[in-house]
Amino acid sequence: MVEVYICNLPAKRDEGALEELLAHVSPDRRIRLKRYYKMDDAYRSLIGDLLLRFILEKQFGTVMETLEVETTAYGKPFLSKHPSVHYNISHSGDYVVCAIHDKEVGVDIENTGPFDLELAKGFLTEEEYGQVWEAEDRLSAFYDMWTLKESYIKAVGKGLSIPLRDFTVIKNGTEDIELIDVHSKERITDYAYKQYSVNSEYSLAVCAQQVSAAGFNDQPIFVTFEGICEGLEITPEI
Image 1: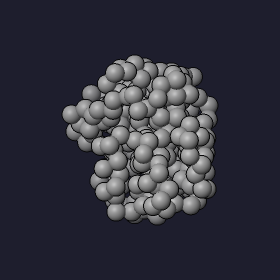
Image 2: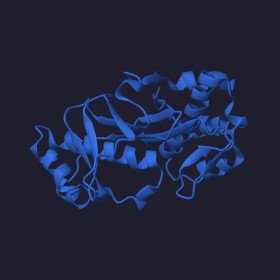
Image 3: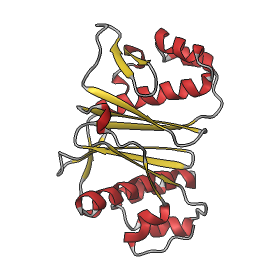
């Protein structure tokens, strides 16, 4: 089963609370998180770590501090001592999302703010751009398409070495989504998609390997910031 967890940022965010939370990540991550110029960016990245820890403890009883997170040559994080556990994290605006599966998985969430759709011609295929242009709500359709493409690239885990225009997403409704290789014209069948509704200001898509449509949880599992901090022996101010 592909499970998707989502957590919102706390209303109150300050350096003191952030410093207290940093004690619960590895020294390397602590250094990286302190390099963020904007506090909200540091919170988003840190919550991704804590949300993963929360999920692993919930599902496997494993404390994150005992896990070794490494990255592939393309920069995708993985749990080196737990090859059967795959995860991916995305964040945008007020939300942080983590998807977990026993095969490769990718997730993308985007705040659907204003965007010049003319620019989309540079990274959408003609078929995809046509689907966006014909939609009643073009902006929402663009972000739906973008998150679907991003989730696939993140699932495969090879970054932009896979050109965005090398594959086409065909939407025949929210429950019927196909992926077509532009060069071979053949359907890519070893990955499946799921779109979720968060609210009208966000688009969320998940892509997972070797799973059917029934293999995704029906709705994302919402977790509060207070909830992911419960096992840390601190009481966050929210």
